[in-house]
Image 1 (cartoon, rainbow, N blue to C red):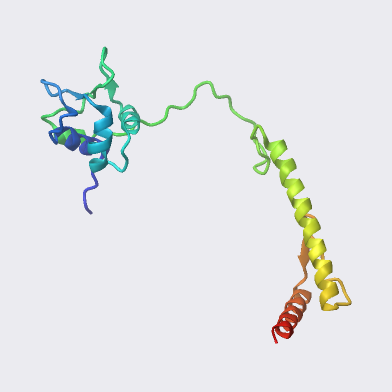
Image 2 (cartoon, rainbow, N blue to C red):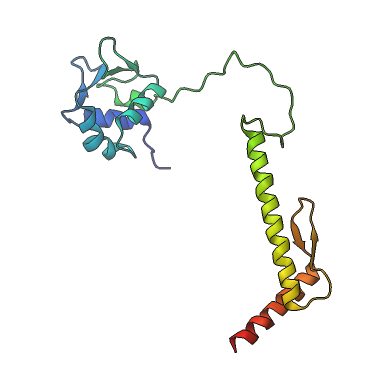
Length: 185
């Protein structure tokens, strides 16, 4: 199985690549960035699938890197050192902490939405369904009249929408094809 570089391994390669906008501190325990814009434009895309310094910064935070006091662009991680590239491979993304303030919730019906605008969204959806139902009924009547069917072709389904019934739907489809074939001749 081929080696897939971890975030730490890619970052170690990026910092060690010798670009003048990112590098190691003298003791090799910190990473400094002098020009985030140029780093994002010229260097980050070579190592990561984006060209954003804020995205790199979020990834550094997510992998437990800290900003050195007194500097916005100097980063530190205890397992990230210039002389230990193998150690960088062990750096893992932080797991999200469970929210201690969260109260246990009562079991709810999975079909009921808890979104704050659920009622208005539901009202809009019902209105759309009513409009579609009216349009479907109008279309059904037009087709019945046009094709000269003596019986109704559909019925109202459980959601109030027009539903074609199997055999009658096939009759309608066949009559529609005949009508279209007659028009094209």
